[in-house]
Image 1 (cartoon, rainbow, N blue to C red):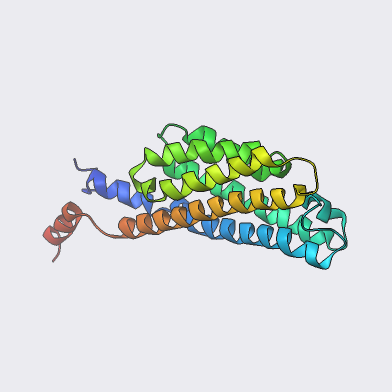
Image 2 (image 1 turned 90 degrees about the vertical axis):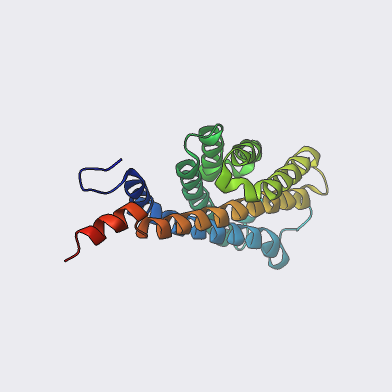
Length: 213
């Protein structure tokens, strides 16, 4: 079917995928990866150079310690990255079951639910189910399920006690690893769609050839 400009529907669809909104998804994914790396690094390294213990103290306690500004900045960067990633996932999985709920739960995590780990953990499982139903996401389903399972396992065993700090850091590491995996996939999909959006379809190429002088 041809549009008014002589281009096929497929051509218009691909051009939409190469739109500025689609091009922004790749930087969102990169920022999400950077944010999670910063968060994990601060959670594991700051206790080694501050007055807090790696095994026995909560991550949130680092925010009021000697290097509290570093931990606070890590929370902010991580949160913004997760919000951007949740938006990108929603855009790329719209129409699939679980897309809205999973993306919403990740968004809540990004807004400040770092101390309520149930939100990102449930969101990880919901989106893993969504990915399994979406052809472009199926390559990460196994890794997504394993990381979601690891996060859930640590969530159940963590409790106040001598190991609470270590368990919390393992939980954050599992969640961050999942977010990085998904962000890498978002970037790959966004780049692929950009390239397809720049390539003319066979019908549009033929149309151009017919009008060539």
